[in-house]
Image (tube, rainbow, N blue to C red):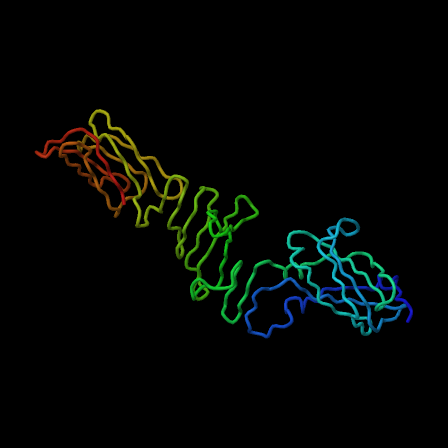
Length: 336
């Protein structure tokens, strides 16, 4: 037999990845759990001999390189002997492990007639495309019949789990383990959602504008968690919306300390003296109608504090001794 025309081979060698077979590993029946997607892939090419499709047995060598023309070899060479070529077409299974998981690689092919002389290196090298890279995901396990996908583990923690991650830092490791949802834009809003029956029910996100992690339920934002506070919409139930320690005085009413825990831009709490009602008026800056409130007199001796609604955003508050005498002094007011 004449030696193959390698000039013709280089022109016609398509060496295409057989995508249809890339994700169907041999030796697995449909529905049988596969421990891993594996790293092997099907490689198909065309070989001509003196301008005509080659037929017969040929020996091949396959090697990965980190450059299209020069560079260094990555991993070991795969040698396959007596590969059948029929009408110019050959198909082989290649498994380099997970060598191309973290880098771009190029495949170099060498060929000779079976057992005859030295190998001829074909050019150019073939870039390894997305198909084998996808099949080389390390540590990914699938169990189609049991509806489970795992990263780093192949068993469910609970019977209802469908996706799980195992962060293996060893039995004595104390490092964090998990994942991040990242947006390319610095102003993007990464989210994680929950749905039933195809209908969204709740989701969490990070709001870059307010620098806050948020919980949304059904159609509204329910909670904001910032670096130093937790906030809710002013009309939502569950958390203290605002709190103030104030000096309730007819001469110099003063805010000693305060907070407003509603989402968005919290308004300041203001205080003034209302001469008509002889009481200090505390304005919280948001609608407190139908909100609960408590008032307490700050004192080592028994004292009382009473607050009544003044406007939709404010309360009129007084401090008393036990005999009913009004007096100046500190009070604490909480809005729920």
